[in-house]
Image 1 (cartoon, rainbow, N blue to C red):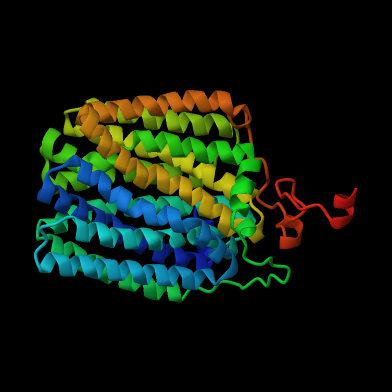
Image 2 (cartoon, helix red, strand yellow):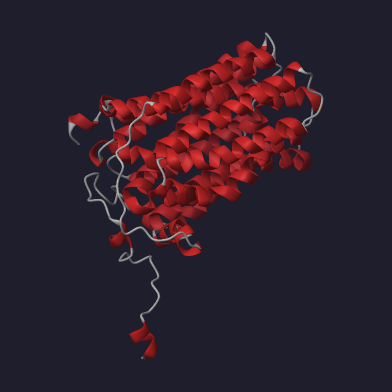
Length: 436
């Protein structure tokens, strides 16, 4: 691998650097907001199930809109889609601030705001994934993935800690700070310039084109195996949604301790991403991916059984490191194998899997606590993650045996006309063939 694509070379591109900076600011603000919302709701009700409802409220509108959002990302200016999404999140933060200043005693107003954020996220995720290939060359894409992941997880590190510290002064302080950061991110995103690619052979919007991404993913066992592995592993192994309950009931560390617990997975992921930027995975790709998911499951079990704050932080650190390896491989696989003309729609399918594993996983965690109890729910989730890892190794042997990424970074891009010739596309027979 040439040295030019190691380190942080992708940041030499001005537009990618601006985009990454804006996304970093949005992510750090959302992490701060999640600390305030989680602690605020748990303080009102004291129910772990309500923590699960936070994820469900965001996932339902996300799941309903994300495939349509992928079609929009393929057809509209990606920059302005992201600007609008950032502005909607800013409005959500201001609304949460208004609720808090007026006295919040019910959960449903917060869930309604989070549902609006979920709708915004449906457009933000596929667009944010698809735009990167328009900002950097394919040669530098794997480096951009590692750099982008490291900055994302730096936000995951700093956001919860900062949110926990500011929460000591009151949730209204957190929401006000979030609003300011989101406003700055929106302005920064407006400065990004994306080259417009004319698509003269673009197909009309139909149900067939809307589902193009699903057909493509189904036709690629490697891609399907990678994103479905992440879905089921994180869906059942997501302990992070229950961190407010652990911080309060098990570890007794308060909102500042909660911020540190939320920071630990991000720190593990960020350091792993930095390592991947310096030394990208080039061989034994399948083994690395399954190993990362297995580490995620084992770390979840250790965290669930731990009553020691230091051991819990260490387990969450390793959890984040394992997750980062699988995320890195999945993102490269999805984007390298996807033709340009349907990149938004395939990214939308990937976003569905990610959203289901995260937000729906939060709801599953809340329900598991009601049925099993706090500690057994987390331990059982980690055990299911390990079981899924073993099953997927048997179901997707092509992924398990994969040594290198299937397509080189300099692979030529596909036009919309070329898409219709790919094997996954089911074309209707011509009239002459039908007569036969």
